[in-house]
Image 1 (cartoon, rainbow, N blue to C red):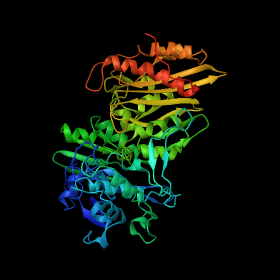
Image 2 (cartoon, helix red, strand yellow):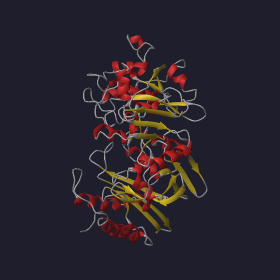
Image 3 (cartoon, rainbow, N blue to C red):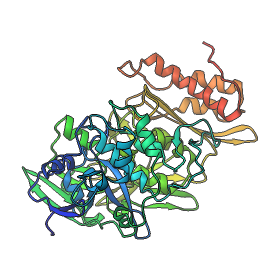
Image 4 (tube, helix red, strand yellow):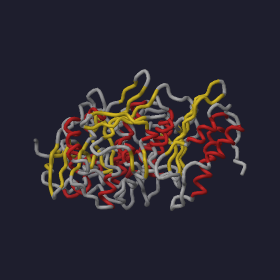
Length: 503
């Protein structure tokens, strides 16, 4: 087994003898790279953002921004990381001439004041600066881009600049000094990277391959298995092991609840968990693909998920979070569950004894509980084809983006000559686990998609689940939002004026 090491800003640095729970952020700072800061320890502020070299198909690399405050340093064994210090000259920025174009624009446009959040902004901005799909030679007019709702373009959710810069790439980065306009101005002032830019040219070569890792310290072990067989064998022997993909949930447990599992199994780079295939009757999505990878890989083939992705946390989180992690936690407010329930998804559970497939509607059994047995792993999500053609995802939260749901609802209808042939509705935030709105589905199926049907279904929808009062919303508000979601869906699918439930 090779000694554990991480390449940071082009320099190989050993990371032997460290705790499996030592965060990448803390390790970097101990190495003298103090640009990245801790703000929230939950992946919500972006002060800790760094760049990681991730595979991008066809032997290329994509620079990806991630939160360094959540994953353990050992998860990056053999990988390449670039910090804000490394974006300038090899020795680190010392003069204005040494500054990276992103750093220079942030300084010139007044995008930095106290500087605490600036390195994180710089890294997120650099990831977008180098994004292969960005068109830096736009028309000079700022454009608004949104996601499809029930198949139609709608008002802006995200803003793009004349240089093709997607401003949503900075979501998850917070600033309390300059405000966001000068930061946006810096982003929109960026041109194309120079052809001899070493960070750009690095993208033409493959990202570092995953390699097996075994490390131990302080009574805990970190293992990156070399194969699916090894992983499942370890899980059979150690059913309480922490399975780690993006660490967007597990990292919070370590930071805030001081969780210290004795064994951590990293699965994020195992090929059998990273498949994305489109068959004739179903689609298979590997549970270790990040949400950003799923979004790019699907390329708009699943409109309902296209509506979900921008509302799932931030780009920084989506660059690490996985479908497997979001479903495995069993959270009653996990945002992928309603959409997948509406799509009639099933999950593949793998163990050393074989595999079994379970409808997602039967997977959750209670608060953070499921039918998953000790030693089992979520390997893939299956979506039956063809997909329902009339869909929508609505998330109700105190902030429009990067917030936890009070309620989320997903709809998927099949219409035949104006009659609802089938209805699937998933929801979260209204029970101890994500649910299908079965009574409302029954109230819709077989009826014409009319104002009367929508009003009747909305009244039934208000009775679904067992909502409670908490800090995010009252039970009454949650029930009201369930009913309103049906009326909103009807209005958007038929271009009808907004309705109200008659009580």
